[in-house]
Each structure stands twice: as C-alpha cells, then as structure tokens.
Amino acid sequence: MLEELEIHDLGPIHRALLTPAGGMTAITGETGAGKSMLLSAIRLISGGPASSGRVSPGASEAWAQGVFAVDDRGGVAQEARDAGAVLEDGELYLSRTVPVSGRSRAVLNGKSAPRSVLESLASQLVTIHGQADQLRIAAASRQREFLDMVAGDDDLLARYRHSWDALRDLDDRLERLRHQESSARQRADYLRESIQRINRADPQPGEDEELKGRRARIENAADIAQGVSRALAALDASQVDVDADSSSASDLLNQAISSLRDIHVDGDFGELADRLESLNADLSDIVFSLSCELDGEESVEDLDAINARIHELGELTRRWGPTLQDVIAWRDKATFEVEDLDASPEKVAQLQDEREAAFDRALQDAGALSEARRAAAQSLAATVTDELSSLAMAGARLDIRVTDRGEEAVPVSDSAGEASTWPLDANGRDDIEFLFTPFPGSPQLPMGKSASGGELSRLMLALELAAADRRSSAAPAGEGGPMTFIFDEVDAGVGGKAAVELGRRLARLARTSQVIVVTHLAQVASWADAQFVVTKGASDGGQSAVTTTVAEVCGDARAHEIARMLSGSESEASLDHARELLASSSLT
Picture 1: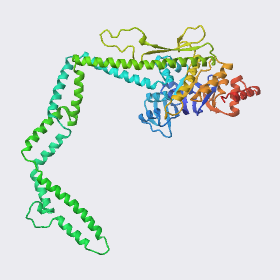
Picture 2: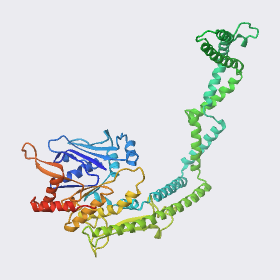
Picture 3: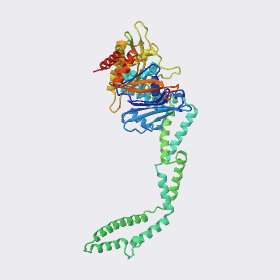
Picture 4: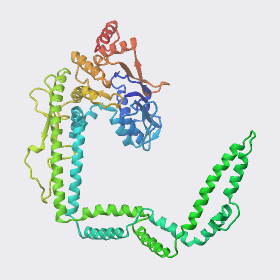
C-alpha cells in the first residue's frame, strides 16, 4: 500500500507531499493543472522511462519517492532484501532522481539499485490504469496472467511447469545425442579413459596429505625418536631404561600430593592437592602417548611405497585437481556426461521412451490447467459484463476465449522427424483472448482495439472489481498489504447517475485494495476517503512561470471543491448540493 508520495521539481510541481488514504483517494483539479505529474511520479518510481524534459525550469534535477507498507514475511519484502535493501517497520522506499543531464538514478531504501529492481517491485505493489498503461492488457501474456490470477490455479500451473521443464530437458538431451559430431565422440573416449584411470588409482579424499604426513615421520624418524626419548627420560626414565632407579615425575607429584593431604590445618592445601592430582592425570596421558610413539615407528622400507603412491595421486591432481576431492568430483560428473554423449541406439531409444512418458504427463497437467481456466473465464466474463451495464456501458460485454490447441489436427513430428511439443508451450496448451463488444451489434474485437480510453478504463475497473474478492481470499497467509490501483480517465464520457455508480464501484474496490483515482467528476470524488486538489498558479515573486501545488481538502474546504466540480461556482446552492452528495456517498 502506498503510504506517501513525495515530489521535488517535477514539471510544474516544485514541492508536493501526498499521503493517500488506505481506501479510496481522489485527485481533482482544473484541467491542465498538472494532475498528470502525479502519475508521472508514480511511473518514475515504478521504473518507467525518465526524461530530463520533466525537470522543473531552473532546477538541476527532479526527484520522486514512494513509501510503501509491505509485510516483512511477504514475497515483495524478500525480493527487496535479496536486492540489498534493509527494511525497517515494514516500509519500502522507492525513489528516482532525474538530472537535467546524465542518467537517472534509482534508489531502494537508501541504496542504489538497478531500475529493473524498482520495476519488478512496483509491479507487485501498484497497477496503473491510464490510457497508455492499460493497453498492456491487450497483450495475450497479460490476459493469461490475469485469468490465472482469477482462477487461483497457482498449484496447477506450478505442476504443469514442472512437467514442461522435465519434457524440455529430455528434448535437449535427445537433441545432443542425435547431433553428435566427431569431437563429441572423441570427448566421450577421453572421458572413459580418464574415468578408468581414476578408478584404477581409487583415490580417497585427503589420502595424499595423510601419506605426506607419514613420509615426513619416516624421514625424520631419528629426530622424533631422540626427542621422544629425552622427554620420556625427563618424565619417567623407566619407559626408556628398565634399570633406571630414579623417581618419575609422576612419583614426585604423588609424594607432593600425599604431603599436602597429611596437613590437617585449615587452608587451601586440599584444593592444591586436587589440582596436583589433575595435573598428574594429564601427565600420565602424556607419558602414555609418548611411549606409543616409540612403539609405532614405521619401517624405512615403507617409504618407497608411500612415495610411489604420492606420485600416483599427484598425477591425478595435476590433471583433474587441485585436490583429490576435486578429482573424485570430476570423475562423478564425467560419468554422467559420458552417459549423455553415448549415442548408442539403446540410449536414444530409452530417452525417447522417457520423453514420450514426460509428454503424456505434461498433456494431462495442461488439460487440468485448461479446465480451471475455462471455468474462470466463463465466470469472469459474466461478472464483468454485469458490471459494465452499471458503468454507463449498457449493451457492452466481455467474452474470454480459451482455445485448446490440442483440438486442432497437427503432425506429431517436425520436418526433421523429431518429436514436437505441440500443442504445449511454457504456459500450457491454451490460447487466451479477451474480446470486447462495446455496443450491441458490434463485432467482437480484441481488447485494447475496440474501446476508447474512458471505456477501456471502465472495462479495467470492472475486471479489477471482479477479481478483487478472488485476490483477497486467495492471498496466502503472510502476504501483506492491499494492492494499489490508480485509475486515470476512468470517468471519460460518464455523467449523471452513471457517474455515481462509477464512484460507488471504485469505493467498493477500495474495501479490499487501495484506490487512487484522478477525476473531474464530483460524483466520483465524493466517494473518496481522502481528496487532494491540484492547483496551478503564478510562482512566488510574481514571475511569469507557473507552479502547481497539491493540498488535501477536508471538511468545509472539501465541500467547496466538490461544489466547484459540480457547477464551476461555490454558491450556496452548489455548496448545499455538494454537502448532500458527500453525505450520500457511502457504502454503509
């Protein structure tokens, strides 16, 4: 949800701060006052194109920032963190700077970010329905995405795409097998020989380092024996000379311990004796370990075998290393690669069988997806058509055509005799088309080519209304905040009772989503929870340049603005009408 929009030096707006309501916000003002600059600011922070011509005269740069409330556990928050943003109190800051000369700069929570990151995040937070923006729904891919959202078929779509990925993977493997050249066969021979060589050596992880340690001990056996003997002679001479009659260090410690235990006077003598006993236990372990060193000497004859093994392992690491673990990993990977490079008829036949089974699974999953889409298309089209009649478009209708490509005859292989994925693609087996009939007797025409800007805005409003309940009920736990919808020109060609119904429906959508509408109709603005007025006037200092201000109107000030919108004047009759309209514009 958009909590705040701040603008500096964008077109005629030098400073503006907009704090939309959580429900419905109306933006009003005289034609040409600069309401479009607010939409331009939102497009900027949404990663849209930046033009230096939008910078206010005399300013060095334009700047816009949107503050959005998001759920810390939601996908938008996680995507922002992946981009390096640090979120505090569930707030996401998207800002954009456009200099007079040079490139624009996108910032995410105080850190520079690629423009594409802002575009990706904003696409999940804001939907703009303006004359240019809503034409995107004319794209078949957008229509399919919208229908899938209404259908709530995420699980079916995920299952199908898993099947599709498995099918494409098998197709890639078969393609490699069928089109192998001599170089591929040579590589297969090289891999087999290398694998055999490594298997004969049978290296173990860390074996070379262990052998080098053993070699070092053998080569320094004399120094080790001399040092260990001296240490044992100092600690316990009996370990190196059975006839030695001198007391060991352990014996001396035992004597000290016994002497301390014999003291029967208050003091720390008992504690000191305990510490000596602990020290004596450690000393005994050391003496035992050193004596084992004398018994565990390896023979010099082992040195040749160890050196030969180290040399053998060194040859492996030089070719496939740098470590034995890398050698083993290379061998395991090469084993799989050889399987793919093995173009034997048996291997091709096996993969073909696997591919046929994968294709059948993908067809079944695509069929289930088609059924869900057809059911959603019928329900959505009927709901939207009902809504259109209440939006001054009586007789208009929407039809959603879901065509199963599998119902058409098609060859099962291409010109090269290889298996075809038809009728499947990455999104299933359907062609989806939104067809709009603007008035009775008109032919069905593709959406976006059959309606004016105002009609298309109202059609998009009807679509969003039909999808609102589905969106709110289907949102998974942990996904935060309502979507923000911005409508421009939605009231074009509308007046009277139809305008009231238009405002009512925008207010209804605002129950589950945040709605911002740019309007010149009082009957629409009166339904808003908050209203901002865009006013154009001379700049400070009496200069010829004009500036645009944005201010929220409440109470009596709002009644005056509604009155101006109704009749162009603020007479008592207009004010009474405005107050009556505001009082009656409620869903409760």
